[in-house]
Length: 317
Image 1 (cartoon, rainbow, N blue to C red):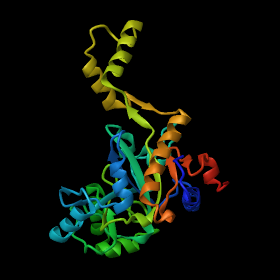
Image 2: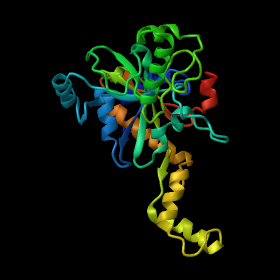
Image 3: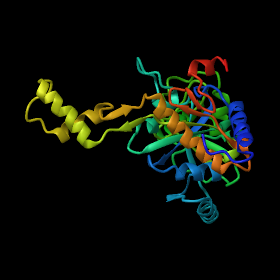
Image 4: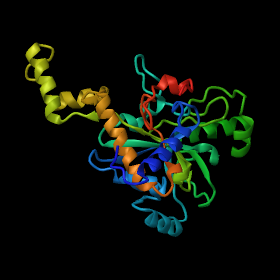
């Protein structure tokens, strides 16, 4: 995969072994995941995330590096990282014929305005608190998270009014009990936000807690490519002559996934996984145990081995 110097082959073998130990089903409930944005040409944002961890924001100031994150966290007194949890999103119901795993059906996987790659991590290292949409100022070292959807917070308020209990008691007592239909709080008292809002976590997720990487296969067609699709429809009679192409594109994009194409060429998907693996190799040479398995949104693993999702689900690897 990369030019091997003396000892390089042994290092690559250790990296692959470490990644295989973390391999599994990305559709397992409870896995935390957060999408990071980057261009098709550059993986620098992913590189920084693999090095510094999932840092997030300090109030409204977008974090550019671990240094600015640390300074802002110290000065502002708070910071939050944004993420979602498999099995907890409200808007990831599988449509008929859609074979993507839940991560691939989430809000930011569906957005192809820029390339996105998700890092997976272990949520079990953190403690869930009551939902809040106001970025509660938890202690910087509190290692807590909460739903960030205002509707989950409203559902919780209604439950509190119903039970006359405190937030803490409601979260403890609702497990296994039914208090009527609340769309964004389930029958076990767990928040179920839309994946657009998800959860916020304090303080950061260090890279040693990462368990995998999921890359996005879909991408946006160029405007000219979409024009040509509509022109062909006009020529074939499927679309009326004189149709405003810009308005037609906007209407179709609002109603679905027009203009989005899914990469299916195994060679292209393999190349994408290997480009991510190359970044890991550069960042983790001093600590190969940090290396992670790389998947597509259908749950197939592309590195360190190519294993179909169903085999991973059955642990047949």
